[in-house]
Length: 527
Image 1 (cartoon, rainbow, N blue to C red):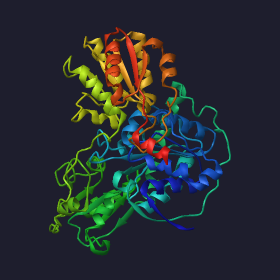
Image 2 (image 1 turned 180 degrees about the vertical axis):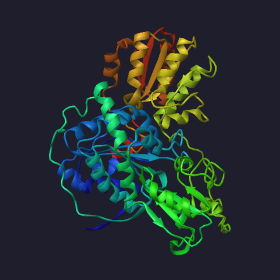
Image 3 (image 1 turned 60 degrees about the vertical axis):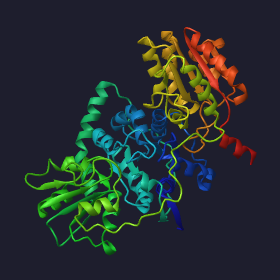
Image 4 (image 1 turned 30 degrees about the vertical axis):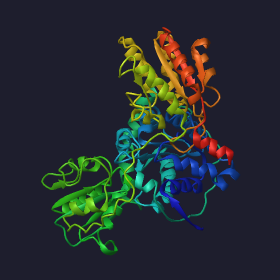
């Protein structure tokens, strides 16, 4: 098969395609977005008519995935780490329902928070759910893992988590392809009650999940992705997980580390190999991206050996690893660093020139100055930059959809005015349900749905609510006369200020929709 130059995300996508998927679901979120995008534009996926459209949010994406698995097909679902929080309900329960066709839950974590609210570690979800997990150390493994992951998923009738991090997702390497597998034939579960979680069934399923844990450990112990390499110097043993293995090897010529090394890329952790390295070495250094999951688990294996890693300060507790940080933990001499002259002055992120949100925030800020700071709750998207100068128009950003929910709570506490700003795609993701709450409770809030005709921040995906926002608002019960559409342009500034003020004065739920396409969408359409 031909060799391809692929991003880590693209390698996962190509691996899933070649392993015989019939569908890919997901919600765009950096650094996971390119997995579905690659499948969407892949010629073979188009010819085979593999399902490849975005879902409204991560929860629905995972539930749709379970539906395709129920019909016996192999399927992958993608999201970023905070998206797994949104999908946690079906994710945890899917460990009990299990899978019929193979299921991979591909989650991209973001250590150092390059484009995220936190840097949580998705491996904890796999441990929590008692679910197998894979963590590639390079693009070739990212491509090959879906083959084994689907096999294990179908062997144990259990979804499998596949965790990557930003650097692997967004770096390229050559990938050798394998023989392409055919898609599964459609077939329903042999057990008609497999996906029924009535308590009487769920209790039995949980006992079964516990019973197969030793088998899952054996799978890890025999995995081609977990590798024990002996070393002459046993004063220290190194356990390196996923991408951290590459950071380790970069510090030694030709990858010849003098210490015993256990590379872990498949979980549950391989107990025999862990016990071996612990018994042979005086102390253990654990290298892992994210949180100290393996480091904490090793405490249960040990009596006297010293465990070094993020918990004892050998590695920083936050942020990404890199070869230099690993080098310091190995007590190797620091390499001379090359100082790069600063040619261009540092520039903080900002709304694009011509962004429609800028004109909305100018109008909103003019009004908010009358009431003081602390009245505008916002959300996650490029419009979150309205917090920065020169706008300084918003006060909060917590999670997808929280702007409307927090405005409701603040209004309940007596705050006036209570205003929410939320993007069109985020509204479709998690904003409709709190808007329904607001209508039922007759909350005195103003919801500004910033409609720029696209999911801009994650790469210009189509929004699920495109052309439907007014009908959705009417459908949940917002009064028609208080659904106002404005055009955020400088020439309309005075009229827009007047409309926002009128809706602030209204005692009830108002929705204002500033509608103008993202400046980059217009450029693409002109081309």
